[in-house]
Image (tube, rainbow, N blue to C red; front, side, top):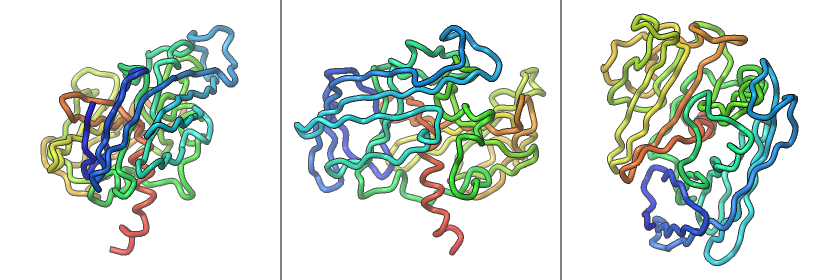
Length: 291
């Protein structure tokens, strides 16, 4: 596989033994090979793995070994602990977000939203000298002061891939806030609409918005549990424009909004941790407030 750094990050899935040649903005080629992947349960309150129990808790870690320019590097992450909100790795001029491995589904199910990688591991990569996208990103919702805390993710487990009820990988990032919290467009949204709604007979209000970057990459956002839209469907949105009131429908034990992030590029659509967007939002806060 060969790809070239764009001014937006690159979503990437790899099988063990596959090699990616990634060209940095400088023209330097970074050779990436996936050597191995693994995952293990750190602690669980479940009586039986993969069987949900209300408010049960399972924390786990996952790992991969990458050979980058002929040197091996071990990357490891934890979910659902505070370490879920991690800093990306920077190796040989490459920024790496280590998103997921298939191995976690040896002890989790995919029953709470699509999230399992189609290959052995999933990453987002970017030239470390570039942002995740060329524009400043406006907060999607009011950002918790001091950064996201795992306690603010539903009952403390529903970060990206967190074990909902101890057993089901969570296909989104939940952020707790009261019903009627404003949701804003993080960047220009070319089209947006409800793909599920209470009015259409569904049990939730679920919104989707899309933006196509000049380089051809398309970013797809979703927000669920919204009280109502504040802008007519299919009307383009500007960065920072409020499009909905959040957290008001079918939100369960804690009022929250559920966020989803997908990248469509190179002919495929790949899900990624919405934390990557929120990480950049926190980075951009100072610059946006000074404008």
